[in-house]
Length: 321
Image 1 (tube, rainbow, N blue to C red):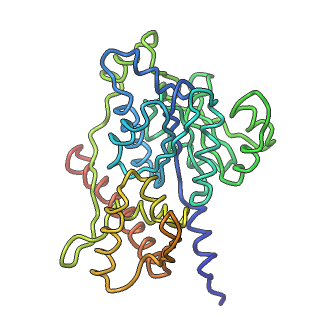
Image 2 (image 1 turned 120 degrees about the vertical axis):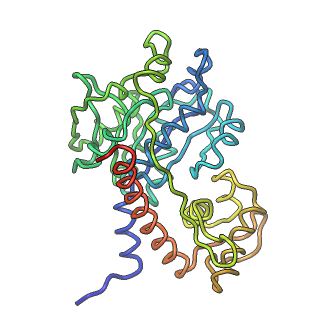
């Protein structure tokens, strides 16, 4: 019986992992739309989107920032997401934001949702329905109208990035010539944008409030807590970028804090989780060790099981199911 190589295991893990890209950089993507609303902060809505994606099983989330980037990144720093800053957000198009996120997540995820930040009221159930479809592209449809987010297979990353037409993400998907699954949903949130004329604030507050739900933070502890969501997110980015400093920047973490987390974990574990080659202005290269990757996979598996158990227990205890 043939056993899987480490690379094959990594590839299989990547294919099963869901990601999400939230475009919160400027006018395309609607982040500036929140400035026109009296009682709604854009970062609160992005935080809501992150929570909905997480509850639906999304493990890696990239937030594209630009307009009010530092404020946004600081506000969301503890959400366990990656920040990809678009410096030319004033002139960039929605497709540019999609390409930034897709290129990044294609290295670690098999599929990813893409959504502009001004469409934050979609529901967890909708995401799960979409994830159950076996198609290269999945689009939710409410009462005959196509909405967001769009679920895209990582295999299309290159084709979408190379599209040079003028029809945006839709044109890139059409040009790829792949089957598209249109999923009928009973979720008006896939269409509702952050606009006064759409009664956005009223719907968000009264008709589609954030549901009460359990959230469990899993930590590994020996003498002190040494492995949790923050270090897990940092290690994922080191795997992608090959550099600790860049990984810290992408996760909104200081370089010194990043190294403190790594060294504390290595001290408690008694082995190296990040192998480094010092040198250069960026602090040299780095990669997660084989034992570090095994630990990440085990932590990820445990996290999924605990989250599922917590959800089941919540329904039993709080909802009487």
